Length: 270
Image 1 (cartoon, helix red, strand yellow):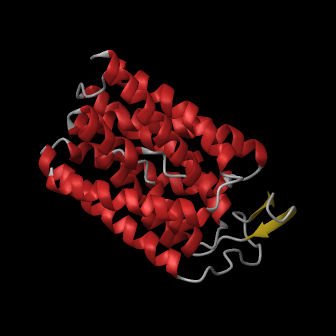
Image 2 (tube, rainbow, N blue to C red; image 1 turned 135 degrees about the horizontal axis):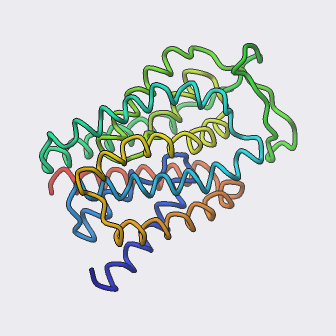
């Protein structure tokens, strides 16, 4: 692999790590298309590299977010039971699907996420929290209002079902699963968005690790490829944590939707 390709990998990892840590999605949603369309990496190898990068994103973001008290560790561990099982199933199924079909599945998933985000952008924001009760409830300090915010967790069974699906998508496409878990925790279980994002970052590393070893067994992990991407992703993740306090969510959401739609079209017509 040329030096230019390694530099592209590092830059791509830097950007995807920043966005991944900022939104709690791990960055695989952007890294896989980047590896396939820009660097020319085969789809299965791109997914494997993305899973390794997701572990790096989770490690960087979770360490800071847990210390800040944003992560609901109990909720994350409960949801991770379903997510890890789904990730293993997804990784096993992935090698029975050819690369063209896998690319089209990836494109459809990204377009669906873009439409969901557009719907949420147009929909008036409702209060996420509910009266704290139960073992999964918690509190966090919100820098924006300079106050401790209590919240409760509801409808855990529905969120568990979506976590199972998110894990399957993670193992199949290397996207970390946060694209489904964050909306599920926020809209279904009533978890505040900041906590949902931080908890997703805490979870996605475990999810990715559950399926990454299966890709390794099939020889899809390239150490040189992975190390370059992971270095960029790790540094980008630290930048994403800093930006999370400053950047406006609406602006990032609009950019996110545009990138999703463009990459989705490119992947589907590839």
